[in-house]
Amino acid sequence: MTPEQRLDLWLSEEREVVELLNSGPGVGVARPAQLVGKSGLEVMHAMMNGQLPYAEFARHLTFYAIAAHQGSAVFQGTPQREYLNPMGTIHGGWMTSILDSALGCAVLSSLPPGQVYTTAGLETRYVKALTLDVRRVRAEATVTRIEGRTALAEANLVGPDGTLYAKATTECRLFDMRAPAPAPAVAARPSTSATS
Image 1 (cartoon, helix red, strand yellow):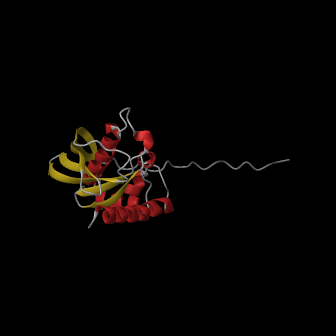
Image 2 (cartoon, rainbow, N blue to C red):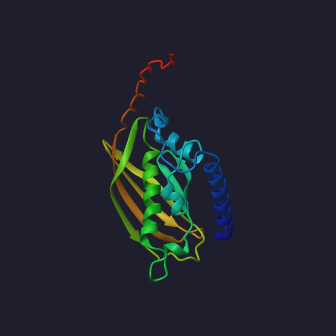
Image 3 (cartoon, rainbow, N blue to C red):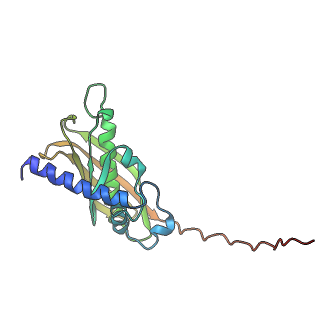
């Protein structure tokens, strides 16, 4: 497949995902009750299919989850002028953000129902400057190890021609999700009928 054909495929997959995201609740945060009984992979698929809200942060930074499988996730992003650093290349913070999102979601996709994660450490290595000439990049993340309450994952940020722009590793802490609080009881109000 040529880089142009790969880019066309990526753009097509992105359009499908964005259409699904926009058909659902949009950006926001899922309520704990919406997550109960779902594995991390089920949560990822529900977000990508527009059944659960997705992170507003991702929309602002123009990247989206494109694929999620057990222990892996792929995010796709669009380098934009507002992400340029003073030297005219894409800011490392944007590159790290898309890598961090893919890494975290790769870890999430490997978790059973009732378990969640938080990032404990993140390291990014920049390999090549990313410019506006690159229309899309993908952060491809894979879990490398889960042991006890710790998960490790690695990711690469690549262009459609296979160029490696950055790579990152993460260490995540795993913990049990708190059960959603029961809905508060509503006390019956006394009748307020009018008397003459």
